Length: 408
Picture 1 (cartoon, helix red, strand yellow):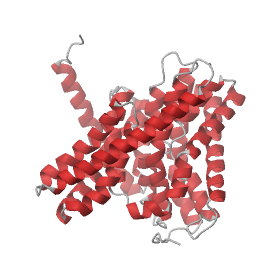
Picture 2 (cartoon, one colour):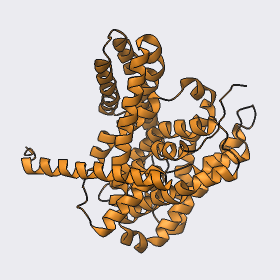
Picture 3 (tube, helix red, strand yellow):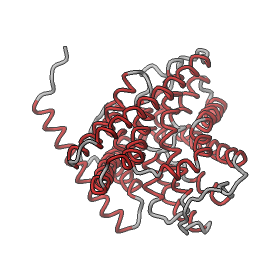
Picture 4 (tube, helix red, strand yellow):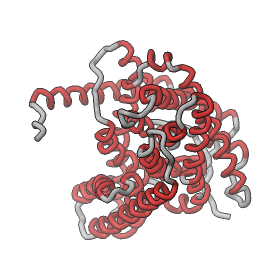
């Protein structure tokens, strides 16, 4: 039986968390002053600390990171997502988040196999862990620029949904990382279980907690129930071997739409918005700071060729997927013109989920250290290079006028 953590270890962990929070706050002040996206500034700050060894770097297990910080990030965005606008862009969102993630995985895997000679199953495993765009990174950058509503809703909703698809593929290809044949039937069954059960659990709990919240007229209890719903939906789905992220997203959308309308007072609704905005901001700050703290620049340089191949593969895959979805949705008033597709391509930022999945690779995965460096390189490039230039791209394309999302 594992011994409980000592008092000294607990105190040390709390001290590290306090330093992280202080650092995140200071970075936020500097980011606002110099006009740098907060997520990008956090990564750069983490890199500076890691390279200069100013403080000891916190060591957290990837499953702990995912469970502690992913639910508030996902629930925050889902709870405040406009369900009406989501329905209007549901087709391109689903195309990007489901077949788009699968296509990205295959394209990246093929490029990596051809360029680096890795076994196909290992290359596909890498493709799956870099296939999902990051909701927090995308939102953190785009919210600072006035954009047409679609260019906020589509990448945000895509990022919320594609996590479940990417984790499913990651789990499936992880089981065959030794180079054996990929069982497509088993992978399809795993995907259906992850998606269907995950969505069902999240929706059911979302309705139950919405009804329960409607019987209470105490904003503190309602806020507590909302937090329980976020983590509970994730845990229940995960316990059923389904997608915890998708369950959390479904629960957030249900409570944010049906729950508000059913029995939530205007004051409670506003307080819950503030609560989830803070919890999402808190998790965002810790995760992106940890991303920077986890990167070893010397190792990235050592595996420079592989990192460049990974970055090119991800960009090529994003271009192909976005253009393919553009062709499939070319009819109607909500079709994305070329300028908007360029923004969707450049807004394909990767972040904390990719880092957590990379660090969670099985120890016996061939070329594991190189794969981790490749994943970190993709995250750094998309967050720093694309994140810092996305605003300029948007302005250059003349897409800074906000606009409402309207049906045909």
